[in-house]
Length: 245
Picture 1 (tube, one colour):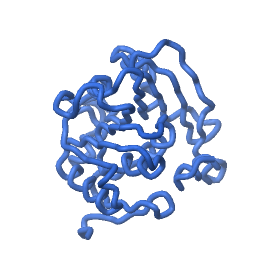
Picture 2: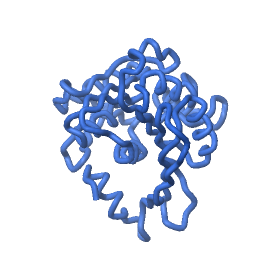
Picture 3: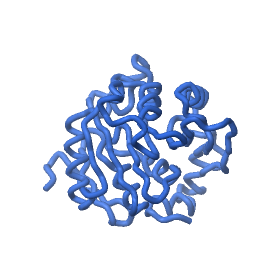
Picture 4: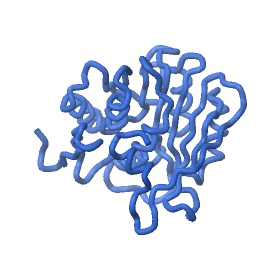
């Protein structure tokens, strides 16, 4: 059962149930964009670094019925809620939530033990911007307990050779992301910019790299979230419902 401090939300047209804090961390639209963008293959073992409420592992398990997903979370409150969300959706056989710190990669799993990694890492540098008074939101947004290089280094350690890592990040920090991926040995291979409206500057960047991959970047057509009037585009409406167009 949920407490008065939580909401119970539906995802993918009600296929998934999600407990979330009313005042603390709540998953963002970025998570659904990443679930749709990441290259996931049949039978993959996938790790989500900084899983929060466990939304991304649940979404991936729903979209790809043959995979197994491990979500890694540092904050105990989110770790506990993520495990409850897995149980609420009866996905314990394919989704595991583990406590872990991305700065201690060798404590999370064995080297080269995953086929794919995903993450929606904190993107505000420590000391920049206003800190949210809620601790859950602070750690989700600011690089207080791990920065971009920590997430990428851990992903590189956990991935097998030619394994894939997909990330969602602010478009403003695109150069930082691509440079850090290459430095971690994850060669950027696919990139997609996300725009609120067709004529608006890009707000987000979806990037995927291959561990030990050769150079060569495919820049995909941009993704636009809204039509005029703030109606979702057909592609975005489909991914919110957990469908592919």
